[in-house]
Length: 285
Image (cartoon, rainbow, N blue to C red; front, side, top):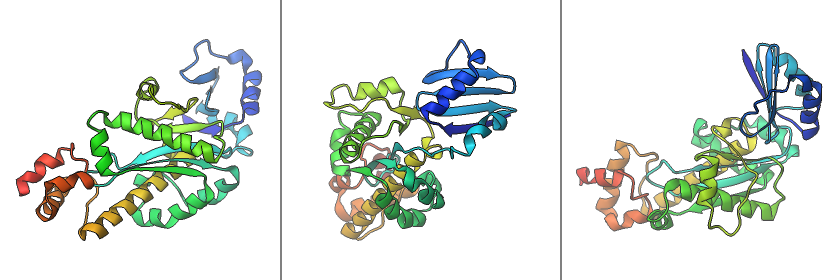
């Protein structure tokens, strides 16, 4: 069995619907326009215009759309965040639009989830992506994060940052029909976090591991990672010491070194102090 995922135009989706109308399923999956159950293939067309062909004959049914549809052929937007699992450093969120005329160039860079790319490559390609793609980058410094976290959990903070990034991006460039968030919370909970916001960007497609499926999310991930690395570099320049990424035992020792030099009160400016690392670092003092 194979699975092929394409991003299609609404006209293509309507053609699939009319062609296989007699095979429409009575039960439609969540966020889907319709589903067709054929011999050798199940076709599911989602509201995001993603169409999934699954079955032994998936390639045969999908082939009619492959020449004119190269998975991410249409302009789309995606957002992702970096830094939420790191003790040191800010939270960086980016919303990004990949225009159709930039897809070929960006694809040639081998862009993928920033966690799968080396820092050296990210530093090299991120500036080019930022020139090619309209984007909005938000950086929540540790000093402000530690205050906000006293009354908002991590997912609530991320939801507000993603929403604001899309608000800012929409002021620079009209948002395309397909807007994707790399899912970190159920859709209904995401919007509950935003209940008190004055402006809420809706009609979003939420999908886990979206950075591996949507080029715009991958680009947003790379830009956010680049901003995170630059922020750590600024910390290192200011304090004249190295700051390790992640939240390991080595980070505990790194934090203890920082406290010995600058005092524990200064941690609020470089670290997420609610992490367990703050308690554990005392073992090394």
